[in-house]
Image (tube, rainbow, N blue to C red):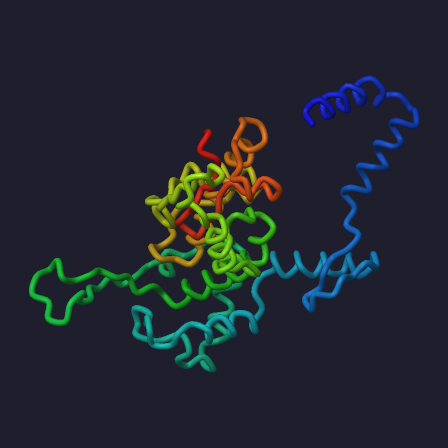
Length: 300
């Protein structure tokens, strides 16, 4: 394969600059390869008409980058569990929506328009809750942060929009938090791969179980920034997510893409030995959020 790739590159360097059939064929092949000829709509139906494809693409990115509508803000506020984590003022997400809903929508629109989160929205009330039924020592209490309701709603809107992107930018080896993927499917695959390990005369194979310690909001900021820059995310990013923020799950998956890329390159160029059942599908590992199973041959 590498030999054919080098031959194709040499042919392009020799003939690509001339106005010959080779040049025109190359342009046509490139255009055909990058043409969006079909897209599935929300109902799962394939749309091939160019006008319909253009409309679906426009609607998707318009909904992704536009400021939240009143209906979107209202829906996300009401989906928050009422009374579970009240704001510092004691009000839950649904309390008096009819009176303050319009003002809350204006605040959310302002945050999305300016891309600045006011310090008052990022403030939290820290309290301690008991770990046991009758606590006596301070070690038997756990500190928690009561985040502002507006902060929760803005985060929920961002997470909802990121969900639609995740299946396209996160490798298939990751099955957690991605719409359309199931942890159960990955578990079943691993169960199939580990069968027969007790046989002494079986085909050599090896699995490595990895539990990632620096997960979620403990990940390295520099690694996250490298991945986001490579994926061409906006440069206006800064630190400041609260512990347990739902966005941290997706940012953690972005960091893991660095490892996924390393494994992909190793399988193609550095002699990685596939598990005998995984070579045709090029499976090197399976991820379950912060747990991972690497499957390979014991010769490497």
